[in-house]
Each structure stands twice: as structure tokens, then as C-alpha cells.
Image 1 (tube, rainbow, N blue to C red):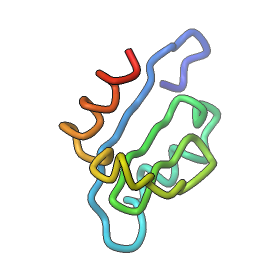
Image 2: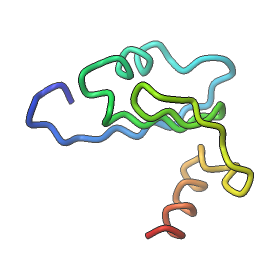
Image 3: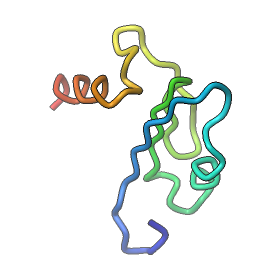
Length: 75
């Protein structure tokens, strides 16, 4: 992820009560933060921004099956 030529994108699904795990928080502050997406029970984090509240119609988007259904609608 940290190499200049890397185009890897990380999508992490996290169920957390208060805060996201420390390692993900650290990556959000890194030079490759714009390629980090965290979908959690608290909302969605995109790089250094977030959490963005989940929309009512996509309330299960933080789960793999929920995100899959959202992607199917948009792709």
C-alpha cells in the first residue's frame, strides 16, 4: 500500500462499538489514506474523512451482503 506505484485499495468491514481498530486509524493518517475505505457499524470512513452516517435505505451497507446489494444496484 505504501509504495508510490501501488494502486491497491483496502475496503475493511468492521463491527465496533466506539472506535475503529488502532491499525485502521493509523492507516487513515498515512500517505495512502485516500485508498482506505472502512465500512463500520458507526458509519463509513473514506481516508481521513468520516464517519459518514449510514442512509436509512442502505442501513446494512456495513455488512458484506449489504454492500454487495448496494453495488449491484449501482453497477
